[in-house]
Picture (cartoon, rainbow, N blue to C red):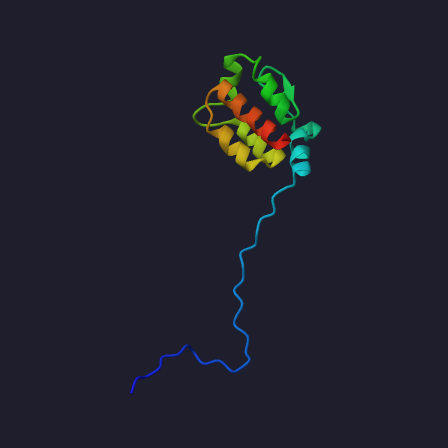
Length: 123
């Protein structure tokens, strides 16, 4: 005679326990993404370069990187800090972009990352 192994007993008609699904993080819509790209920092949160230039959004930051001198860039980006990444993270809540920018140590590289971000969000 063989013995049957069964799962823990359940009353007839009882429902199976439901597994909870992990909360899904909502992705912003394209319109919301476009608004975030065009978002302007509040007056008290504009980025002020060491030479006095000011930028209010991601696009302006990318554009100004074309014209600032290397010593100005190096003041804001070093092995120990990246002021641009901090600004993007804390003012615009662009955490992924801030992480990418934090890994950049050259002016052209930061600029490329910013322009890619802008073009990706707009299309």
